[in-house]
View: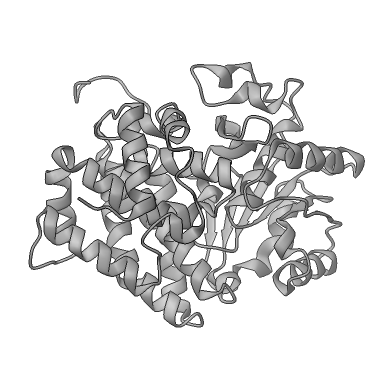
Length: 389
């Protein structure tokens, strides 16, 4: 593609950002015509104070609210269907998508499907499937992230697992973009260190893969590069001192920056991670963090220049591929990321199937090298055994 060719760029929704921002939620709901929203979150957050306090805040602010918490760590089509039933049965007029990537992805999908007659799988991000959608009755969404990882609060898609086929599907439509992303770093203060590391590294991977994806998108490149610089400086601080609100704030920015940047594309890390997550129900951010170095090694011939630019931005003494790779491994170790997929109980017994599925994942299209199924199988096997040759 030539630099002068026609292309379309889209950038995020309205964001209300800062410590204490959650206090504005009742007013924001009313401003969007949401007088009886459904708060959608995951199973693990249902009884947590950040959810119960938010429900109280809304009710005291004059907003009636329902709660749906039947969302798994990797949300499924069944979760979306159950949430859609709760939305319709409760006569709700909007969705508060609350939590990490799972709660926000499910919430956005429920709001979108409120206006559809086709099944959710008919809107997979393939070709022009998104043109099938009816836009008139899509419910408004306010997204409230409680982790700093996926950046789904500024995204136009949701990742939903098909439990029958054990595949993760990217469900896309411009209407998935929330009306408002309410980003309050205070909500991430209680996140345990290991989840802070996994979700934060997910945001870093988004920036890295977007920066290395082929194609012309200088705005995405600039955002991705600055996101990596912020993550390098502040993720270790957030992991080792969860009460460091300055670090938490920067990481919440990185999450949104990564999701903004990856409009340019993702790559092989996500292609493998989506496949592994669908088959073995692993944590997405942690899987990305484990797999990343093995994909970076496989992509070396195509990313030497990008690695040098990253090294200069990080102010490394050795700004070439080897220096950045050494920094990357030290960065992972410093926040407690395991070295292999075996460490997170992923077997290598279905390596060929992993390879075959990974090459078909939409994220594979953004990889700097178009690896075939055999190459993805090889990368996966190395990630299982720890072979960084």
